[in-house]
Image (cartoon, rainbow over the protein chains, first blue to last red):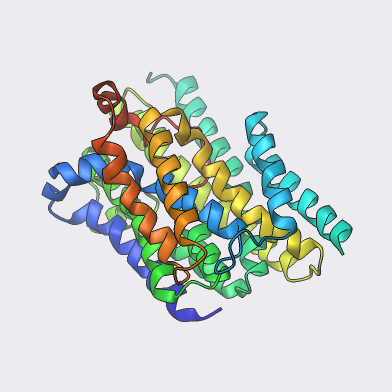
Length: 101
Length: 241
């Protein structure tokens, strides 16, 4: 993995925190910030869930991952804790991969 | 609220949150390793960037072949809310020295902001903020290191398992936000946009395009949902985002 995005994202996210700590705060009062910023996580993380599950560029193509992610979603629905969800998703995907090949 | 007992209880709760959230650092380290991030890179993200959602997003986007630019953009968009938390926390950080304010800014994340704003007394807020922030910082980095080191020993099919753990981590971070009706509407729109673009758009474009779901979802929200939305970044259960 290249260092460039790692460093730029690290410094950029740190600067955002400092902006909130030190800068003029009027940007927070802007209606667009008040209305839209609370929904950034739900939007981007939903999209990442899907794009990390399906292989991009090839519609409907996926692999053992989709079975694991589906198991993880069932675990979420059953209100299991975060680490249990990840372990179930990983274990089911690994088993499905072995089965598939 | 000022007796010795409750003072200790706040610190104990905060460090407990720090440890629990820090444990998830193990999954970040392992997932980063499966995405071909070196241990140094994983540690740079956990110590300097230090915001779980942005870290998972950057690694996930790069792993699926997104350009560096769009991966960084997604991480920064997710980091904007920390700036809003920092503004909200200014009443308790403003009277500190410059150095302490810099450190306070760095440990401003979902959990420290949530624990600080959950206290009624300003002094309790300070205690909760520092104990939670430092607790998460220390344990998140410790477990990232362990996760990254153990991840580098894994071979197929365990690596395949980890590539499924990444989207499962995203789903876990989304889950509590779907209770908010506008949040759910926006998530469905974002899913539709992503599915529509994924087969033909360049990598990274579907995720950034999903942002269109926010203005559409907010504009079409029924009036009653408007009141709920202010709480939507605080009513979630504790988790690394």
